Amino acid sequence: MKHFVPIVLFVLIGALSGRSAMACSCFGPQTFCQTLDPPYPEPEWWIPDAVVLAVKLADVGYGADMKVVRSFSGNLAQDQVIRVWGDCGLLCRYYINGPAVGDTVLWAIQETDLSGNWGCGTELEQPEDFQLSACGVYWLQYEGGVVSGPLTSEGAVEEIGVEDFAALVSGCLSTGLRENRFIDPIAVRQGPNGTWVSIDADGPASITIMDASGRVCLTENWSGSPVGLNGFPAGVYLVTVETREARWQRKVATQ
Image 1 (spheres, rainbow, N blue to C red):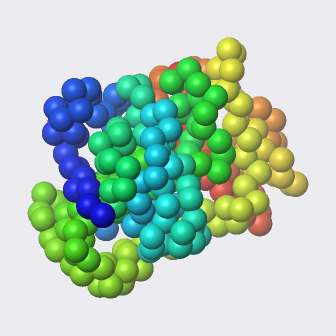
Image 2 (cartoon, rainbow, N blue to C red):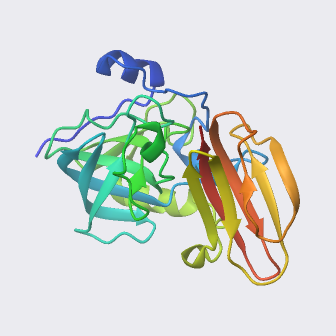
């Protein structure tokens, strides 16, 4: 089995694929560790939901089915098969058609924001799927039990054994995000009338919406009734909802 060596620099991926690797205004932390735990006040929504060593099983549209070999963070299990979506040409994601079937990759992935369903004109993405963001360092090189890339120093190629890498992930990963994520009450509706956010939660809440630069676009007390993002420029936003009991965050894409 061969090991795919991913390229982190956006411009190089675009040159190799013949397409732009970043079809949006996007930036993010420039080291893997900072992607796991962005320095304040940068937005926490760069943090991945899982870091996995995985084997590509098949291409599926602009995504791929992957089998988890080892999980370093998150709730994915060894041998679990997941679907990871990349870019179709209009999203803030990497193209993931570079690895061949059978290649092993090391990716930090996030739960899909379903933006491909409107941006790519499909209905392929499902809530249980994942995505590979371009807004940070989500790829690392892996070969012969060694992980390499900009682990803690921007632009560096640092090498670490896979067992030490597991400890690095544990040390870098933020613990302050997504409390009660599995009972997330945030609902996102996208359609001809734009993007709307609502919640199903008891009691008063507050809502804060930030753009990719961390700028607060909206903050107010909230009853949970639908809030429209129609007046916001097209892009990906972080919606944070807080009640007396819990706090949730969700990435939301607007057209």
